[in-house]
Amino acid sequence: MKLALTVILGLLISTSSLTAQSQYDPKALETLKAMSATYKNIPSFRAKIVSNLKNESEGVNEKFSGEITVKGDKYWLKLDEQEVINNGKTTWTYLVDLNEVNVENYRPDEDEITPSKIYSTDYTNGYKYLLIGEVTKNGVLCEEIDLVPDAAKKAQYFKIKLFISNNDKTLQSWTLFDKSGNQYVYNITDFNPKVNVSDAYFNFDKSKYPGVEVVDLRQ
View 1 (cartoon, one colour):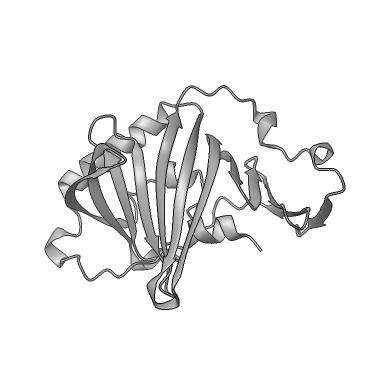
View 2 (cartoon, rainbow, N blue to C red):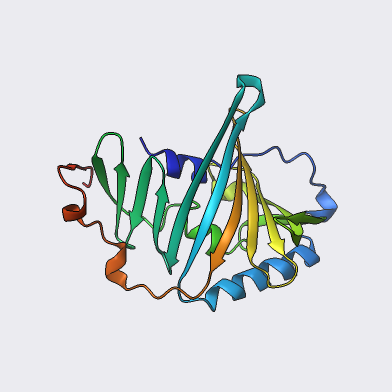
């Protein structure tokens, strides 16, 4: 029902590459803190995203493209088949083919990586982190960092791989794997840190979706 959130929240990878001695890498920590500081200084931004869903054992290789606008904990994710809008209190998931929108309460206390949290999560708290090395992504030299949530987090995932620009500490790409062997690769193709949007922008406007069926799942 919610492909976009399922893809972004399904963050599962094997942790076998991490050693006990390098689970808290000071160099990785420095980069993570710098990335966090970068996004805290950007009031709102818009990014174009190209993603691939792969599963070698199932022969799956699907490509998606979209755009996300973020302001604090608010976001609007637009994909070909659906849109996900969150105003910090309510989440609307609009399904294009069905012309249907599902409405749910947003629960920020839940341990989930949402489309906005991928940029703002405090990865230095509750995660093990390791700098793998340097690699070029989208023509940008990046630091590759593996993150593994502590067992106490009881997270849906057990590893996140981030590719962070050496130059401006922005997130260029990230790779996610789930338990069933699905591999999700996200690449930022365009990043605009100078977007001026109001809070009202992150509300679902029913009038812009003629005939839409509203399914209210709030309790």
